[in-house]
Length: 318
Image 1 (cartoon, rainbow, N blue to C red):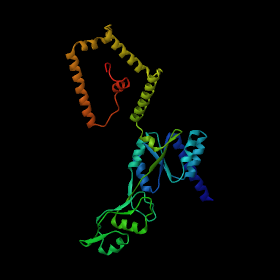
Image 2: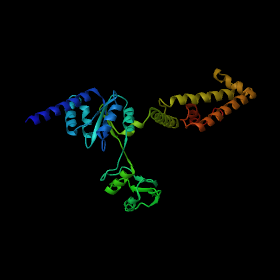
Image 3: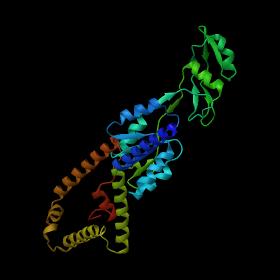
Image 4: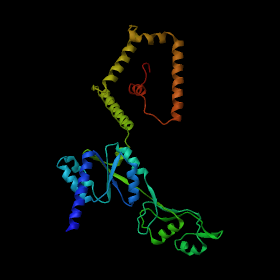
């Protein structure tokens, strides 16, 4: 009876802890914790100090706590289906991208244990092994070609000992242990992000503000192009319509000789071929310098001025 009361007390304490975390933090990162040792969890907790709280425990108790808290905040119901299998919860109010990066950085190399499913190919490199010649038969049994050099075994070629997805056998695990090879890298993997009622995959965290801005500008460009082609004015196409009509007015002014203030600078250039030539040479030099810079740097989104020229079929007098 005493043990049952003690167990119930511990469960209540744990549930109260989960409720407090749900009340304090708006974001929860759901991470898989397969093959993660308690020591590694402590390292991750230390790295996330004052930024996030890592919660490990029984899924049933976490779900029970979420159901209790959902009576106060129904949004938490979205979190409940995610609490399954071998997972941990990382509570935070910080940028999930920053927390994800800290978690991913904290990985450790681990030995291959017999019966483990290999998460990646296991390659035994060629070269000296440090093993005595008496071990030759053991390596030959694994189809590894060797020779004796300087009283130790030398592997002649790189060998794929275990393929990704295959189960590690006892012989393979023993050999890797003898060679001191720790072929696997284990760490927490982010599976889902809960953000104040919204749930999304880890790939969303790779979307930057620059990517969003670029996509929005591209879509606005498409909308304005369609609007101009159909002659149907929209909020995004009006600036281009004004610009296009203004160019037409300038062209009419130059052609007819009807003077308007905005056309004076253009008229002066046309009446002074030398000045026009200098301006064109200057523009050509600037374009040449820009192209050279683009070769040295990563490509950047097309500038607004260039987009305008493309949309309206070039410059004023093309």
